Length: 412
Image (cartoon, rainbow, N blue to C red; front, side):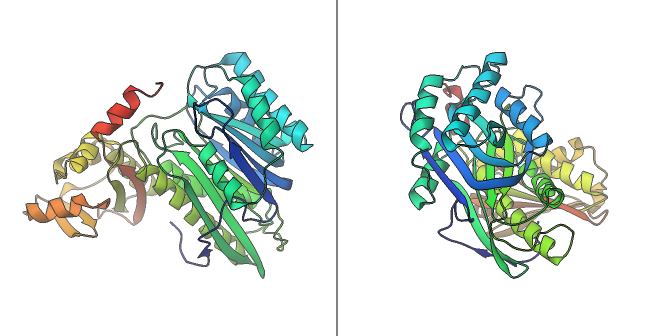
């Protein structure tokens, strides 16, 4: 979690608010109607850090991206197709990912090794390359730093999402204004260790590769890896940050106050996107935030959070506004962490109030108040283990009838 507020939110900011970035999106024909092709471009090569799904069936575009980012290549552009994941497509899928990157590079007059190409959507279908090539030809000529094209870019990465997920903040580094902005997609197939999500962050900060990796990968573990919707992990998940240095601040190359300011602001951006993904879980009616306090170690704290939020029984109880604390206790027990039942405290908190449901033993509570607390759009589950000093927080959602409806007809 971020530790201070040495940043300000830019209400009208977007993915191109950081200096030197332009973007755009359009409909090229992968989907029936909505935008399905997006490009983010830095006018100068940018330091890049990225994380990817741990699913062993990694899609060909991600295999290629991972090769490039593992070599610490500077990246200048990201191209995203939606509606088709280009996953389980073998050698042809990899060739298509390379081909897309080369086509973008040719149009933008940059190296194809500085272009990341990724995809999201239906698995096991080959890409309509002619449509994508035509779309790239059009899109590379209209990308700019306008609010309209930034919105088109955000729309172009969505699949079952119901709203655009974006955030932009400003900080001061060594006397220079620095902007950090992010967009994301994600609604279903969400589970810790990267889930059906795409996250793209741009910043004009001047920072070394080592320090960018340090800040970004820690934040991924504390944010994107702490959300779950349905326990399923996709083949196409990735999170990427591009830092192009155009703010012209003195380079951040060591852990000091300025690094902490950047890292905390970056974590705020990523936490906001992570919570939006959890909130937009397919068919969800509640955003659930689970806080585990007083664990024996960090691993136990995180594992407990994930086990509770991943439980279909817990998620169903919150959909039904049923304060069934037994399901939470069962999830804690399944997590195999160290705890003492006699010290365990469980409570629910929302804008409607708070209730304690377990404190070493069942607590008699007001059922009507419990329903009110659990009826709010955002509800916190607070678990105090009282056996250590480590805390963790994660986000999820309830499990509803609409989740089944959406996923029963995903390809149609």
